[in-house]
Length: 196
Image (cartoon, rainbow, N blue to C red; front, side, top):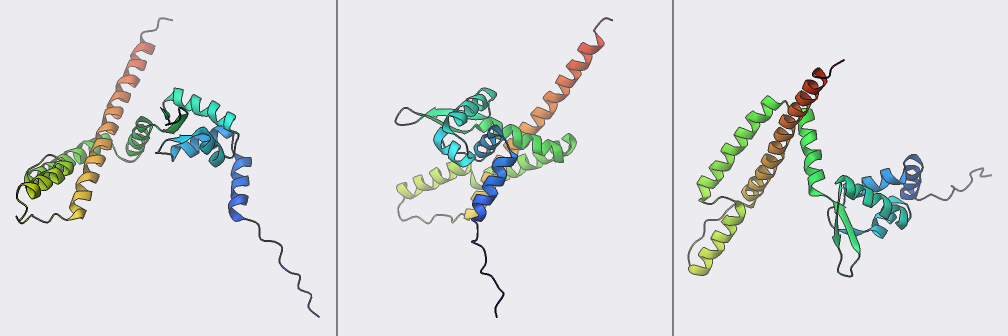
């Protein structure tokens, strides 16, 4: 005889994980998480679906996140409000992450190195940016259709763009780090000046 029972119906793993996420978080936390990964404008209904909550709840929390600067709103083609992660919140998050892992002294050194590398790219190609390089090459092809163009490695263009982005984030991190020192210094001087 065979005592084996057939296996139970296999539950949808995604649904089980979603239910676990829903039971362990608030609607606000889920909406914030969804928007943290939303870079193209979407409707409140889409956010609600992804956050496993009602559209009305999503709108309420999205408006709160917009007031806090975490969310950016735009008007869709049919007049509805669309939501996405604000670029400012992403910059602040990246800057905070950099400050958690790199000292300000090391950051100053890295910024200098990145600026030197950017200068090398600009000198080598005779333009200020990879976008200008593409325009310059296109203009040369249009002006001289038969001329030989210098082949530029796409990896070099990617590295140049990444370098500019990293420099922007590093500079923002340094600015925030410096500003925090002034805020902390202002707080201490205010506290020190309070009469008892």
